[in-house]
Length: 533
Image (tube, rainbow, N blue to C red; front, side, top):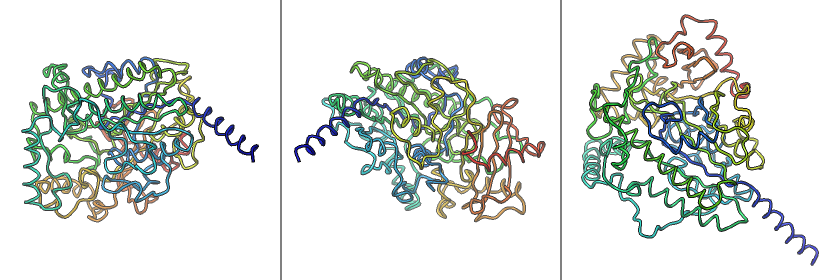
């Protein structure tokens, strides 16, 4: 027995020592952030901290989400499984409801000796997987710092939000609870960073990190999720002041793609729910400029918080044993193609920022053109941490790119989105009540365009409930195939093809002019992600 006891002690010490040798991971998520950053070539964005991280790490210039909306995108990344596997295609169904046994990234790391914790938004709200994915809670109280109350810093805006909700609830009943009402789309308040939730959560993450740093026997996985630049666009005044509105460039192309799918674009539903935004018709140039200003202010606000978090890691003496990865969950149309919002299958909605830094990477400050996907992050971090990669994952580790970023890589990236034009802004099917609200005229307009284009193919149940847009991005092309989700092997109802060599803004669908190329790309799409590398 003494020998067994001694062995158990030695085995335990060995396991603790092995865990202690593993790197920490700082895992930073940013909601609704398209690659509107200085390091991605933005001519206006003020993002010095992410620019500095990219200048010493690896930036993916062509990384893509698997679905351009919050819950499905995050569920895919956090499980390493694609939407067709998770079954999660909209924001109103939980991950564990569909996948009770799938092992998430932080859950897997717990089993490998990691302490895991999150602050802010990592999974979609209400889907945080508290029981499985996190081994501890973050610091609960911050001395001398009050947690923000309400979505806005200014009382009048919180009042507007509350009054709008009461009005919508009285008029539309339960439908109002699904995003029909909100406060103003933006706020410019002269307040400290922690007056908004992202600044507060950054301070909480720093305090939590310091607690975990005291335990030398366990590496940590610290997930810090920022809600901005998701609507509503609220940021302290000093970040608004970084921009001259007159110098902010607006969308170069604000029309739908020529010959594009009539179901490919929505009517900016998510933005139009905000107070002060027209419920029908164009926004107008002045409001459009203010909205982009608000988005940029939020980008700079989040960039500053990321800088604080990385500086705290440095000050704690942990930088040289900490992997840092920053990702956005999807892109965002800021008037591009004439719409405002995420939720499409086009480049502007599916392309995301992805930056990684590791202590021992051999190449620094490089920008890779290799096609990457958010689903690749799970196996990549497992490999970097020296832990097994679960068999269920459906991405490819991009660790080889850290040392050789310009090598030949995967041939395609895959995304999908159900009919954006006839879905509510959370990607869920239209409820009957929606047609009775101010959404009604918008829905009727879009529906008329689809009927005109699709002719005899029009079927209400199919187009509202079962139409899925599958998109594939190759080195040169974007293909979008609109299919009946119940029969994905059938011929697509409509196909879009864009040539990024001559048309990087995807202004013209050239599918009808290149039937042989379409056939070849459809074959590649049907072969799927496994055949892409």
